[in-house]
Structures are given as structure tokens and as C-alpha cells.
Image (tube, rainbow, N blue to C red; front, side, top):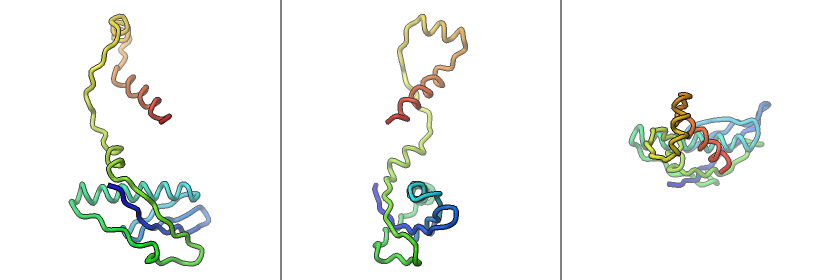
Length: 130
């Protein structure tokens, strides 16, 4: 499920305070890029909690023209993909079957290598580049 919510970025001495009026949540960032990133994270977390933890419907986003702000504020839209965010939060372990050469298995077991940890490290390195 994808949604787009209006946010208000208020400049401060240390960056930006971000308000999400429809959800009554705030966050902050040291620059606009981080502020938008933090807004996306805060909105996604709020919506996932509303749906999964509380079983409540999520509010529909307001129109950008309905958002009230002060002089100097930036009003913009932030998109969120709730299903993708939910997958990121899902840290359940999944059993995978894999095949390696016997000699490698023998040597790794002699050294007490944790196969799961090695695979997770390798996958994290590969996925960081995606």
C-alpha cells in the first residue's frame, strides 16, 4: 500500500523540524534530505503500528492546500510504501538450505565458523550495493 502525506519542514538553527499534521507526529533532520528521509521513516512506522499493532484504519492524507504553516516553512509531500517498510521490519529468521563442498564444510567446522553469520554478512554486503 502506497500513500503520500503532506509534511511541514520548519527551519531551525540545527536543521529542520518535520511535522506530519495528518498523523500528529514530528521528527527532524539536519538538512532537507535527512528531514525527508526521517519523515518517510516516521510516517511508515506510524502507519504500520496503526495497522498491525492497534488494528486501526490509517487516516487519508490531506490535500496539500489544506495544510497550515508559518512564513519560512516548507510544505511538501512524502511518499511511503507501507508494505516495503513492513518487510524491512520483519527480522524473523528463515531457514535456507545450501550446498558447499565437503572440504569447505570440514575446515569451517574445525574453525567453529557460524555458517548463518557468514551468510548474513555476505548477503548484507551484497544487498548494501543494491
